[in-house]
Amino acid sequence: MNRLFAFDARTVQDHFPGIARYGFNLVSAMLDLDTGQQFELLGPPPELNTRFDLSPWQSKANARVTTIPASLFSLAGQWRARQWIARVKPRLYHSPYYLMPYWTPCPSIVTVHDLIPLLYPQYFTAMQRLIFGMAMRLAVGRARWIIADSESTARDLRARLHARTDRVVVIHLGVDPVMQPAPAENIEALRAHYGLPEPYVLYVGSNKPHKNLLRLVEAYARIAEREQTPLVVAGHWDAEHPEARERAEQLGLGQSVRWLGAIPADDLPALYSGATLFVFPSEYEGFGLPVLEAMACGAPVLCADSSSLPEVAGVAATLIDPRHIEGWSHAIERLLANAEQRAQMREAGLRRAARFAWSETARQTLAVYRRGVT
Image (cartoon, rainbow, N blue to C red; front, top):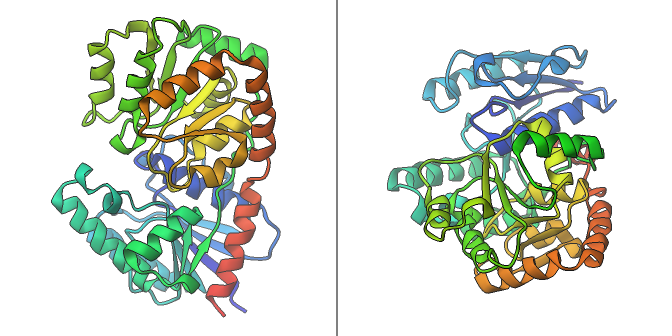
């Protein structure tokens, strides 16, 4: 029996911060499971990936990694990916991204992480909306199975793309094992490196408009004069959306808001662990991995009550309407003043995060693979 599966890992590269982590962690966990399966992996060109060490994949007896000299975003890249599928003859092909070969010589699976361009069209050009809409409809229409990161994304797929309920499978993401409470000396070294005080409130994520960073800055401005704990903002910064930083300057927040930009992945566990409070006001998330990472590192979490976040955070986090600026101000100030409540949230968060493991994500994904070829 052919026990070969193909996974398109071209998104495991610097251009895809979130999807890259999904692909890397999922494939690594599947390769570690002793299932007797073999994997053909279509990897990224080495020059595009500076964040993920793929050498463990290459050393596995149950995997082979191939690259192709064409961009994922080009028609040539998709045609060559189809040629690769035809050459290796897998039982099934899995793409973690909607740009993929849509007519494949074997059954296909696509993972849909979110539908942001459809739900927030005002943040995209007409051409971007057109391409996303066409490509996503092709991916969803051609795939035998559709994996969604959350029940929230699954509902969006059914409502916006009319995906059949019996073809959509929800598989939650896992938390990287390195995300755990950091030793005190690691936290101290991180604070010294970034010039952070001992108490700080942390946000980790991009500055894309749906992340709601502008409202978070405005909420923080209401308590900045009374509260000496700064807001630390870490994550990829898109120069097309400078509004939050410009607003902080207009409000004269100065050192009340610290902008770290993108930081090395190795620094994240200590950054989360050192936070007095983690805040995540995003209006829409396909999953919301930073919430679980913060919990896994022992940070009490205050997050939005929108999209997938209540599903992921459960009762371990304090949930607030992402549009309610005054509610965010009050909640941050209240939690900073209540060490006992933060300690309870910390313990609840650790228990919650322990329920999400990449090994379980891998087992459930392989179960879909087997269903996809029967």
